[in-house]
Image 1 (spheres, one colour):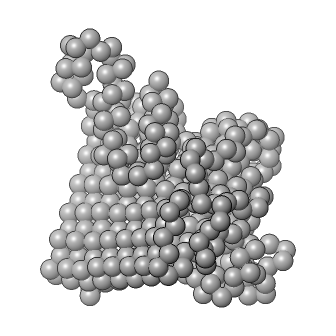
Image 2: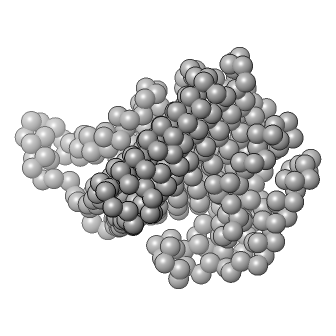
Image 3: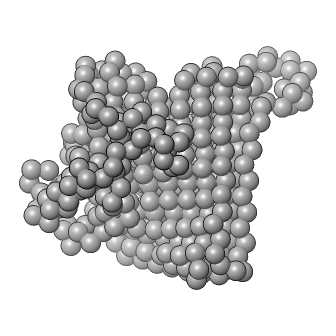
Length: 407
């Protein structure tokens, strides 16, 4: 960020100053009682640089409109076919200069730096993606960004800004990947998504870290009037992962769908905090997160539907279901509602259960081995979320990744 314009440098200085003055997180805060901030590199001594481990940087199995890759925060040049007129897929640091008119008023507008995690990301990000889809344009192929870590750097921070203008449509994939690292790495990512009136966006976050990675991710999406936003978060890798996904119904008639799939094993710890905030009347949201866990792993889901005054006609749903595969694994689910407006339809549900003995007996009675039967049950349980992934090669890769964890 050495060549950042003055306005961007000033914002970074403000974030750095905030980081110095804000109180250190202790883990005793209500929002942090399940995941110690120190486990994510948000408190205590900064992670040290370590020994690099090679990582497969092949990000895609299908055609893409454009791809970007970042290794340990170092970007490569964007690569892609001819994009429709006006579409921009760029490294965010360069976009601060080349596309100031588009970036300046929106960067940090949804995820600022008035709290410690936000200030840390704003003060330290190096890898960045900027995607702009102009008014009325449909991007036929998805874009994909790969952020990878080798362990050579103890902290990796990245930021993404996505703008979908009125009537535009796109699919955007963010993939996070590493091998099993010899030294711990703390990753911080912040993704701001702005979808204007009548726009449509499908956003996929695929978290596929190896051992040694601790990832704190924030994703905030704002949907304008009659906009459609579908966010799919898949968490399969990393030692400690905390994802904070916030969906804001900023315009009437907007439709926000937050879908999540996670599978934890060994001693992995995953926490997902998902919020739908309805700031306009006649808006819809649906939060659906399903997960499986085994060994000594621990998962946490906190969901909240927030309807402040002035949003009548809100139609909002929240569901979290967890499948525990053995004794020793633990799932916590905390569904929550904050309703301050009359004339709304809101519901929430959370459940933790084990593999149904009758289902297992039925499959085994037909000659299917027990482990294979369990695998089929888990895949079927997660299929409700997988079915929402429209890209066939991505859906197939995820099914194979789940099967590998089951094995």
